[in-house]
Length: 396
Image: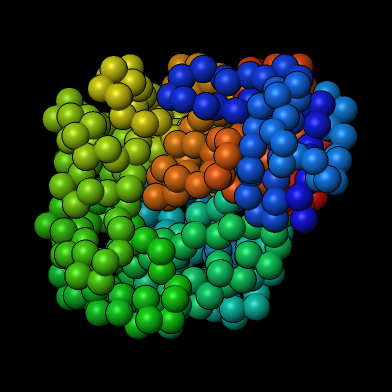
């Protein structure tokens, strides 16, 4: 059905800079697609006969894209919050059997239905703040059966009215029963063909860090992904500089995420490859980090900047993309426009998606109506939710 959404204030994000504001605007949609967006006075002839939908002056933005989450898992790690307040570091907690390994035990013990039910509660919280596209990683199973179960649960989240993209993160940590990291990496690579054949994998991710996997080990995983035609992403330079960004850029990675310890060479590699830098202020805040990602240098190099919640049970338990807008500005000194682009068009780029993130002809009809006067308010305010309505695939 063709619909004319009229009398809204559009934040089109057209072009590479600027809000693209249209004060008295309209959107013409048909099914899941936007046919036209622009000033109401310039309606095209094919708007005739469209069902009118009154926007009543709402601010209209593209739907939000949360391009980095660990939404599917079992158990709880709130005890680690207290441990960190008492002085324990991320590495201290991991060495003591906490961190990722703690979640692995709880996830392995959960059924697919249990994993879906808990993830669905979290996904609904993201939906309530305007998320229309969601990335979900595995990585808390660390064995073939549980990793597949996580990915199946993630796929089922699409039934909530979300476009869900999955990343296989088998190379997240060494499982507790393993002692040989190279042998484990071989098993991760061996899992990929079956997961792809079942339609469970959109991209392959890894954690390149001194307490996870080396660049050489990550390269083996990326080679296996490349052989299957799967794009790659990477957790890199979060706690130390392992030169993971340069490695990932060499594989044409969709994104490299965290990046607090990124160096100039890594920035140049990302810029040359067109790889998106995904900033994760929730983890930076929760871990009380002090080393900022090099935002100014990334900006100057023309590297696209995305934002995401990084929702996970230990180091970023937030379910508020709106809070990430604020934190991206306050902690990382993004502009409000950069922050919103980070959760829309650049978040989509981090998933390899060009058909969303803007209000323009040909884009998906995913958008949000907000009770605010200017888009900067979405980043400037925190602790409340001004979402009036969320439109997914052209449907309220």
